[in-house]
Image (cartoon, rainbow, N blue to C red; front, top):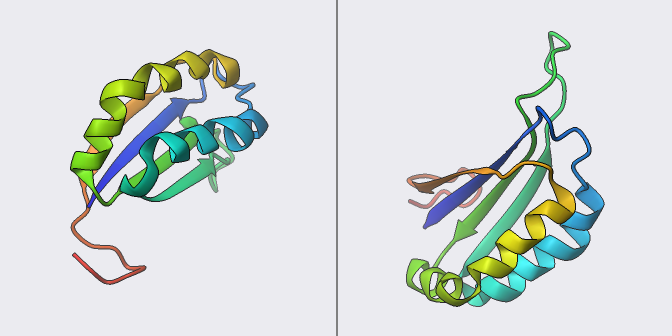
Length: 109
């Protein structure tokens, strides 16, 4: 399994539209990724114990169970996702892809 982490920086992006993201962008991702998608998790950054602002206003984890299926879906529909970014964010995200070695939720490697 792989995890795509999408990080939207807070700086310059204080008006990130979580409503739009959850109502429209997440369903679009689900439609595009289909059965290759295992789970998607959207988190809002909050102040730390020291009261400082978070580095990221939004962090998204997209767990992919079928990487080949993911690549096939994204090969034809990536632009749809990119075109929506200005509708909810003032900055483009930082994206990192990881291999999931262990998950405490399911205990599987």
